[in-house]
Amino acid sequence: MIFSLISQLKGIFFINPLISICLTICLFFYGRYTPLLGFFAKQFVLSSALQNGYYFMSLLGIIVSIISASYYFKNY
Image 1: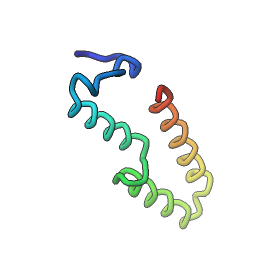
Image 2: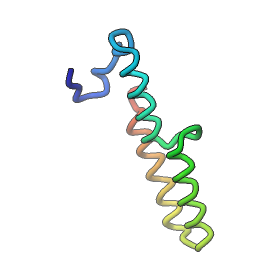
Image 3: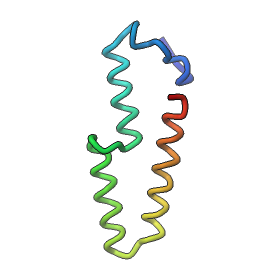
Image 4: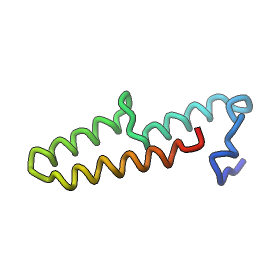
């Protein structure tokens, strides 16, 4: 099966639960949510940027993260 839209994934859990769980975990990695390693990597980079005085870049990174998380999960 080839999916071009996230809306086409509706009900995939009932067809193949393992694939849908793996896809969910991958989407959470993209969103950089707290319990996953992507969050800690982003937190380390942003805290280093703040310590070195890159306030604008840190703010930009936070804004881009919020925009990307809303893009990935807008259909949920």
